[in-house]
Length: 329
Image (cartoon, rainbow, N blue to C red; front, top):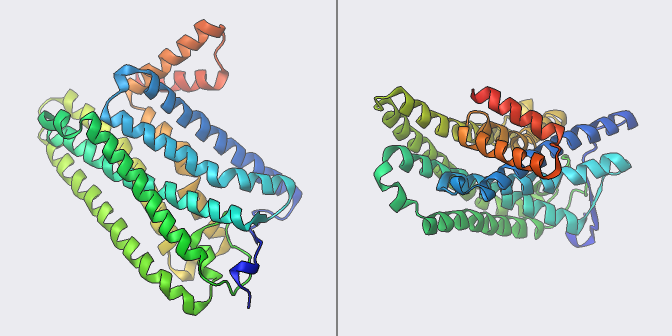
C-alpha cells in the first residue's frame, strides 16, 4: 500500500523498446507537433491581422486554434523528450499540471465547438438576427464561458482525482498523465467518489452533443430550402468543416473512453489516445482552410507581405498556400 503523498514521480508508458524506435517516435511526434504549430499559428495570424476576418465565426476559430496549440503542447513535448533521452519519468507536480491542463483545454474545446454550432445555426437559420444575437460582446462572453467552464471542470476533476489515495504503484499505461489512468492507481473504495462526478460529466457532455446534433438538423433543413446553388454551396462550405471537426473529436474521444474491455489493449489505447489528443490539433487548421476562400486569400496576403519584406517565402508555408489555392480553384 502506498499513499499519494509518498509518490514523487510517475512512470509513463514507453512507446518503444529499442533506441531506433524511440527516435522514430520522436521524429514522428516532432513532425506532427510542428505541423500543428504551423497550421494553428497561421490561422491565429491571419485572423488577428485581417480585418475582414473579424467576424464571430473566425473569432471562435481563433480561439479553437489557441486551444489546439495548448492541448498538443501539453502532452507531445514531454513524450518527445522522454523518447529522446530514453526515460519514462514525470514528476508528481508535472503530472498534476499536465493532467489539469489537458482536461482544461479538452473541455474548453468541446464547449467551444458547441458554441460554434450555435454560431452556424444562427448564421444559416436566423441570418437577419445574426448581428443582434452574435454581437462582439456576446461572442466574447460565449468564448469566456467556454474557457471558464473548461477551467472549472478541470479544477474539480484534477483536485478530486489527486486527492484519492494511491494503492497501485506509480506506473501509468499512457504516454501522458491522463486522469482515467491515475484513477486506476487509486484504492478501489475511494474510486466511487470520482465515479459520481464522471457520470455527471457524461450527462453534461451528452447534453452538448445533443445540442450540436439538433443545431445541425435545423441547419440542414434550412440549407435544403436555399434556392440558389451559390447560396447552398456557401452555407455547406462554412458548416462542413465544423461538422467534420466535431465528428473527429467526439468519435475518437468516445471510443477512447467507452470502448469494450474485450478489445482493450495497451497498444490500441495509445493509438486511440493519439487520434483524439494529438491528431485533431494538427489537422483542424487544414480542415478549416482547404475549402475556405477567405482563409486562403488571407494566407496568400500574409505570404505576399512576407515575400516583399524579406524577399523570401519559407518553402513549407508557400507550398501550403499554393495547395490551398489550387484546391479552392
